[in-house]
Amino acid sequence: MIIKFLSILILISLAVLGVNKVIKLERYNNEIIKVHIKLINNCELYDKAFMVKSIPSGKIAKFQDKTATLFLERSSKVKLEANDSFPGFHFSSLPVKVDTNVDLIADCSNSERLDNIFDSLNEQFKAD
Image (tube, rainbow, N blue to C red):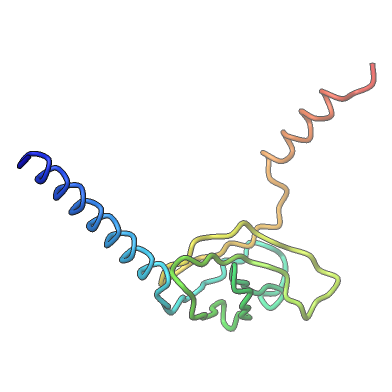
């Protein structure tokens, strides 16, 4: 009888600890932090051709002197996009998890990896 009682008590204690851990993690992820974003522009374009966009909130910031600042939840991500002031220009990078300092790299060169993928596809689907 005492073993049953102690087993139930231990299970309840573990459940309470687990729920408490989940609540703390949720609070941490929802905490608003100031995110400083630095643009590393490896393209032959002006820095003002780019802006940063947050996911999922959709907040945007434009770069001034290669930096931008946003207030975002820790669980957010940011990505580099073409500045909406230039409608003919299209650019988008992969989303990056936020931290207090984030570097976003604009690289407009054709990567060797991409060239290898296209070569492989061309080889696979070439007419005989």
